[in-house]
Image (cartoon, rainbow, N blue to C red; front, side, top):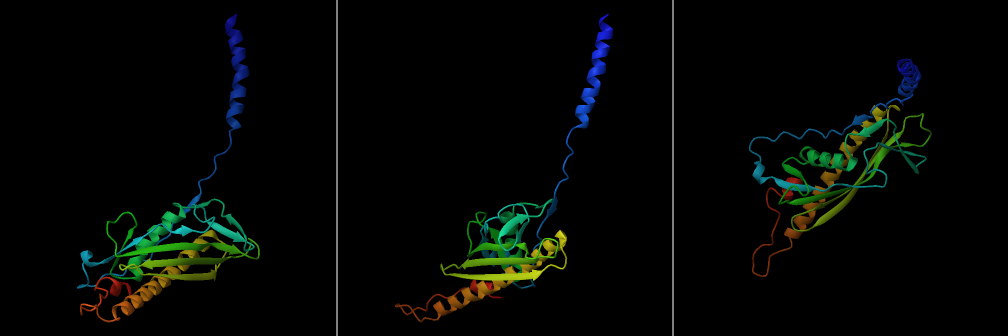
Length: 238
């Protein structure tokens, strides 16, 4: 008589097991991933310095303002409270993404310059340090309206003689719509503008300082003071 008992037990367990399967939580959709594309480098004309003569700029991992050093896309409400867009991520943590952007963007704004990540080169003529103070959408009038988008970069460029100059550049603009794709696109455009302006100003300041140092006069032995060599400061000021 045991088979009927087993059948009854199975009849009781099957609905329970099926009910357990049906009660499993639904899987969340993966977040949309976004990246930042650096401007294409300017093509090197024939006759320019070869790769071995390029000035090398070591780019450090940028320092981030609180709340920005993550893979989440930041927004600010009421100019104070930081939050993040739901269902979206940067493809990698933002500091890593921006370091790659800064390395790749050097060839666009400073032709003849070779960028590299700090720690991956044995010798560098210059060292670039960037602090990212703003990189977010700002909702001042509610999250149902198109936000303003703000990018603020502080940069310092250290030259071969140890001189260093520091500058700050901010770019801000209202996004054309409240769509996340539009916000990310505006961030990318403002980043390109702010970074390009920062690099050009840093190069000019460093070049001016080097030129002043080279025009002081002669050394006690009668030899002229050292001046920036071709392929170093002069390349940065192009």
